[in-house]
Length: 417
Ligand code: AMP
Ligand code: GLY
Image 1 (cartoon, rainbow, N blue to C red):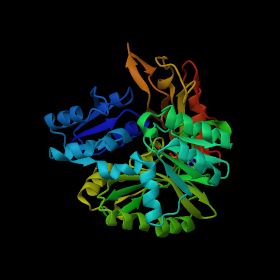
Image 2 (image 1 turned 30 degrees about the horizontal axis):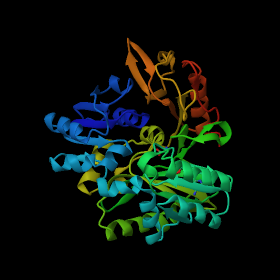
Image 3 (image 1 turned 180 degrees about the vertical axis):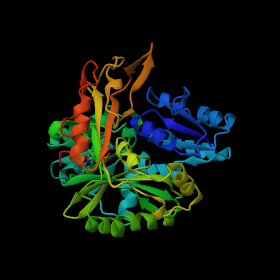
Image 4 (image 1 turned 45 degrees about the vertical axis):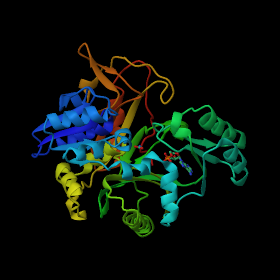
């Protein structure tokens, strides 16, 4: 098969790495890719929001399967566009992608179908939103409705901060049109877990659980980021919790998808807040997580292409997924300053000094004059799989110091339970 992966993050590197092991894959392309992906796939320069350009490329190159990594092309309808010209695609269509494209839509769906979630209100003008703050206790969570590259959620410790957030988002348009509507939400306490599920139109089949570390600095300090590290499985995911999630969340999502005639085929990422073996849904995403993918796919023993084809055909079963018992950890190295401003173009040294069992999934990297240089906020994920988390973590932290670039940053407490 001729396979195209769309995206340029660590998630897409992990997807390319995994599918390049499949005997079904003859040619692998990536749009636009990065310096790591370039070693295993032919990278082609298109922007991920160039729906027509990517569609034409896939058609002209007789691509048998396109796998869409990031949310932006999904929300813009890349899957619809590819299907219109008769091509196979892994990733939901525009209608289903609204689960990530609009937080208000997702929250309304959750409430309509009895899926546990935080109390909330949706507002499309700032005055109403400011007035409504009275009804919320602090901390208050203020969220831009649309896509904001993982930055659109503000946790406000004081009412004045929430007021500022509303003004920034709705009146100063900090996140552009994504902030035309906002969701104000009750703050939930507990421990977060990411549950990624394959959805084949009817069946929702969870992958192994993972824990993401969203905050920029050690001890969960600093701003929210796309994710600074991850490990899988997540020990909080007990059998009791699994039952709760099956009975209160997954079964209700299934009913909702059917009632709303949403033909979801791809990955549904359920962001959960867990407390006392019960869970509430924080958010839905319509794609693999990043860095969750970098710890989940190394543990998947089955052929990912076979799974994706079954998702597309509506024919996936739990038995199709075989998982390694090993535990995986990934630590993200970021450019100094991320998630705020940071500099690109720093030469990265030491990548060839890693131990054999260390996997590096590149994110913001690019090849320049024969050097791998930084090209984004999250630069790469250093990953290892071992019989237990401690061993995997120790190996990563033994190796990570050999990677050197100016102003690099990483958390030193990933997977310390
Ligand atoms: P979201 O994009 O909605 O998942 O929000 C990003 C992050 O903000 C989550 O992973 C949580 O860490 C935090 N968050 C979002 N909503 C809430 C909430 N209602 N209570 C507490 N934390 C939240
Ligand atoms: N790691 C969280 C996300 O991919 O949205």
